[in-house]
Length: 358
Image (tube, rainbow, N blue to C red; front, side, top):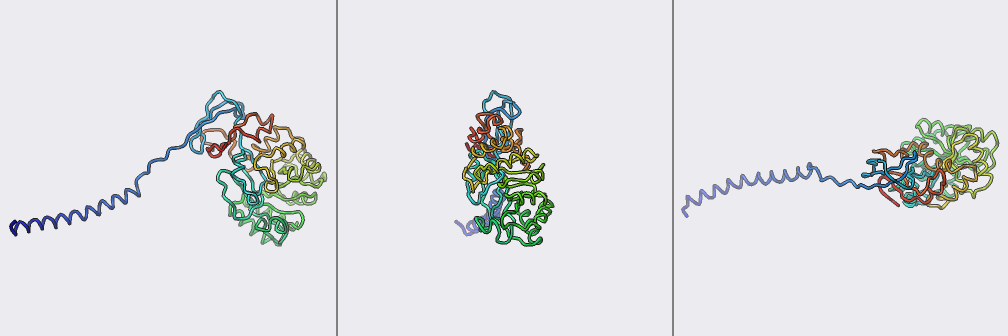
């Protein structure tokens, strides 16, 4: 090969490398930007269906796509489709059985006194008060709740700071302890004012007649338990138009407690089902609580309302809606619970956020 030919080839190779190097850079950039900007293949939406009779009497098939109800169509069906059970008084940090509750049909739990560090509940919808407000070293800090289940306050500034912090951290309700060495009576109205300013109801641990009357006079919204001490007539009247959480089994189903609930309801108080789970040990709807609610004069339709539609409305949750686009969170039961509330204890199917748990 002549020297001139070798020189021409070298020139071509140098020119080629100048072209190839920018091309390599361009390909790398295209690959990088393509990886960042390309639309990933859409994950298929899991779909399923079930059927039953809705509370309004319509027999339907419900199609579910992802977490939502996709369609509701008329169909031959057996069983009853019903909203999930709400337990309006639990202590999940004290006994963490969230997954068992959800799988059993308790779709919502209201944790009334939990440390501000709280465990995640994958399927269960949890509303929380955070720690209850009490006296410094008072109940429950002096008993079972020493590990963050209470906030001790001895002045109004502490109360306001505590309520603000709990509200900012997502509390759905504020709880105050009034029995024993609970919060000083003079501070209870400060709790109510601070909570109501943030749109939050206040629940009181008030088992005695004096504490229940104090709570009513201070503007408290909820009795966290049915009081155990016999209530005076004026105390019962003071709770007309307000709310009481049952927790009858938690105190042994004493006749005085059952009679208090009977009288509170007759006077116009709204009853919400609650078990005080943690202190009781039914990791699901409580047959014993249902039995005691019957003893308190409630028929099965009223009990079912206290366990499902009533608390869903009270806590402003929308799981009683069976329309396309609503969250697919509901039960399928073997019987109409308004006739036999025990059907809620052993649901045929449990659907939470479109996932069948049972």
